[in-house]
Image (cartoon, rainbow, N blue to C red; front, side, top):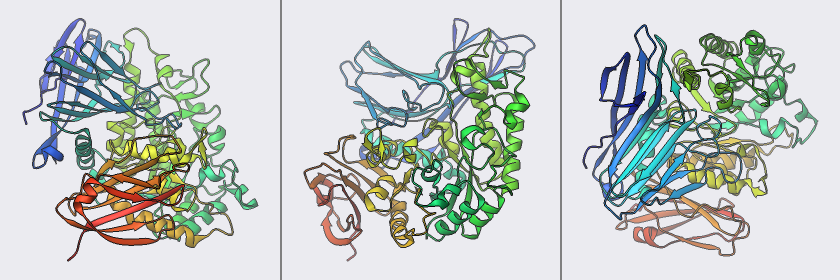
Length: 638
């Protein structure tokens, strides 16, 4: 494989400057082009036996002079040009972003012809919101490129094909910035794999997920064997009292109820995280976001007694914060309300932005979060982000500032998380933004999207589509691009639990019900714990994504080191055929495998199956509809 050569570029006025690696000067700017080979990952498929380089690059510009810079109108983290033979087929693949509908993370595929231009970007300034998802793979007939954009704001990816060349670049949607003395900005970052060989998209994605797991995920500091969380999380079940089983649930926003949830949930083997969402502070999510020191009336002693109760049962305590938004009358609002660059409101927009790009605001918010973590014995940090920041930040731009405040806001978001991790080594960060609307290369390097869409807060349907269908589709799409993510289950039966499980799960069970069936919950959770290790393997979708009720959904995982794997299959409620034939990518066709089938009642059946059958015409059978099936396989023991 030949070495890839992608260049980061920007413009000073009309003059294009191509950065060489390292540090150099361009007029009165100090420029740093930081390009690193982070390591390698083993090749898959036709690349088996090859080590594929994992590269990260980013550009930083700083004005170290005493005069203003010329306008900076283009700044790219990726500006690639790849030679193409005439007539060769080219495929661009990505996902739709999240909008809490059944279309969230829907796969998108493009076959660009010569002269065609494709532009992708998110909606509203959150990196994976609705119209864009910052992960892309490009498959040519003789090369493969897969990359993520690391930018939690308004990025733009542009692909153009002419008769003999492909051009790909990624950067900010727009900017026109004059850097004042001492100011600096950075580009989007790019994490990528490039191979100058024909490669299947499946194998390119498997290698890229490996690359993130090894070099660009929280596993780099939590440890590769880190156990993905199983959370006790029932905020969505009880907060609006929509599923109240008895009068006690109406006291959900109280110390007494939360302690009971810890006691009941903490007795489940394998549960390891107590999740307190947005109901602990004065006013709660309804009207009090922006309060850090004032607690809801049901918590007269703060959250410390509840978190200490969780610790008694071996549960780490995760707590919800939203540093970027506030409600009128709250602590943050009252402190900074007189400065429209710190607390930003826009006529016609309902919410209020806390501009953490401002240094005074940043230091205040960081201090309040650290104080709360100390005061309440908080172990894990959940950040939510329920505001589209783009319109707010654009409203405070002036001449020569277009894009500047957006950049500083995003830079300080990373700085906030990095500062929390520096103060609390090994800190788990859960990344949420109205669900999964802030999933990108930079956030995934620091955090897990434990709540990969707000569909996780729905117990039955997503705009008429069963929530199980939404979860199956989200899992199948996201697992092709990022290593770890999760959602919830409100129910204990196999179909619901398997639809919601990944390496972990969030249990939205009715813990406050006096008749809560702990044995049934334990059986459901045992299966999640048993299968969690397979999520560290190669992921393979076995069916096409669909919201139809008359089809199957199936996918597989394969562990390369031990040659073991798992198939997860769902026969939806109107699917007439009780059989599905699949071909697995992972097993060795020359081996014999011990195969365990686990049906909807969690009953086990064991068989011995030739590897060639697994790889070519492996038949899955589900008698019940809707119904599910787990299949585990491992090399036969003689």
